[in-house]
Image (cartoon, rainbow, N blue to C red; front, top):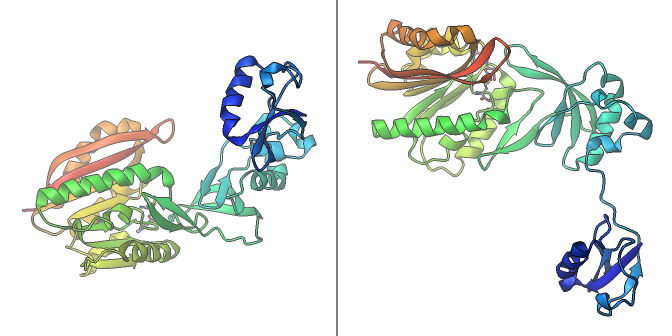
Length: 363
Ligand SMILES: C[S@@+](CC[C@H](N)C(=O)[O-])C[C@H]1O[C@@H](n2cnc3c(N)ncnc32)[C@H](O)[C@@H]1O
């Protein structure tokens, strides 16, 4: 294909000139030699020797066509002829793990899909099919389909708010989509710490791999200590690793600095876990309200506390939720202030995902 050979430093100027005159072909700029670049010319461009080229030569070079821009372009040709509805329209990546849902149409082509995805995305190591979230641990049911290096583990690393987080989508819950909620939680804890005028103890009994602490542990002077736990032993292993990494550069002697693998409802029976928290996070969306009565004893029994949680509720019950939250606090012997329950997003046609929060005075 015909290319105009120009000195490298004049590439932009000539690109603009050729484009403005409608002489540029669709393919990309190529390297002619160390000091010259080739601009692809179309049929409409004048012949070599025309004054417009100011003496620059034309050279015949293979055009640099752009590679495929979508993973489906790597599917074998007969499969590319199938209707677009055959193929998954979305996927999620956690670190180097790619996860997507198979349905009846795509299932027979699972291997070809995984192969095409690996070809298109050089940063993906393993492609897994996701059969949905299962059990109390809210872990995805993953089936490894194909891996670049033969390893079938789903353990990987992601970055959140500039920190490394060890995750394992096949073993423990983690959702990158909630990173903004965690940032908001950090802001609320910071405001509460300023209100109290001293560092606070934060309890997160449903902490998963611990992402709520990413920002808090980085902030010297915010936390006096932390109580973190989860019922899923795999999540707790990852959380221990994560917290150890996030606290490495923080010289604070956190007290308490406790990580446990335990049912949150049983924390109230443990002297080292009960009566110590200034802030409690409740992230068990399907059961948060039901667990609350067992969690109030974790608060320091005098002064003020901050309760913040997330729940999935019937939208028709939204109106009565602030009242319910306040009466649960009163039943535990506290006085609620500024209680609110805010819809964050739809969960299904009848249910929504809400944030609830209240200050509590214990005197
Ligand atoms: C929705 S996830 C939230 C995890 C974490 N807070 C986050 O934002 O990534 C709920 C977590 O609660 C844990 N869990 C379920 N039942 C529990 C219980 N009774 N006590 C403690 N943890 C529990 C699950 O293993 C899961 O990691």
